[in-house]
Amino acid sequence: MKTAALALIAALFVPGNVQADAGESGAKVKTLMRQPLPDFPGKDGAVVAVEYAPGYVGAPHRHPGHLFIYVLEGSVEMQMEGGERRTLKPGDTFYENPRDTHGVGRNVSKTEPAKLLIFFLMDQNAPLVLPPERR
Image (cartoon, rainbow, N blue to C red; front, side):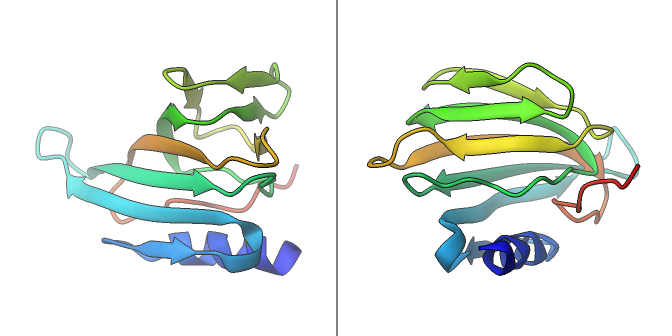
């Protein structure tokens, strides 16, 4: 399971229009769009679709930018390190700060997938996912 999670993270390091199916990990990630933002030199905006398989549990990680998450289908549990654990349903949103580690991300259902739409604001050409920061 740990190897599959690392494969997903490695797949996300590739810029551009990427689709990764992490196999055993149960997460499918597809970069729908990534665009430099001319009014914000040095910054990119990106839109990413993520599908968690039933029972999926993600590895702790962080991102080099601000994330705005919108739940399309299913139910997911999210928690930033030191923050409140929340269960999100379709139509709910979640914010990830680039300074924090995303410690909990899982599909609550053991039978149905969960689908998320994620908007990124980050440094140009930065990878989408980083390992957790060691403190």
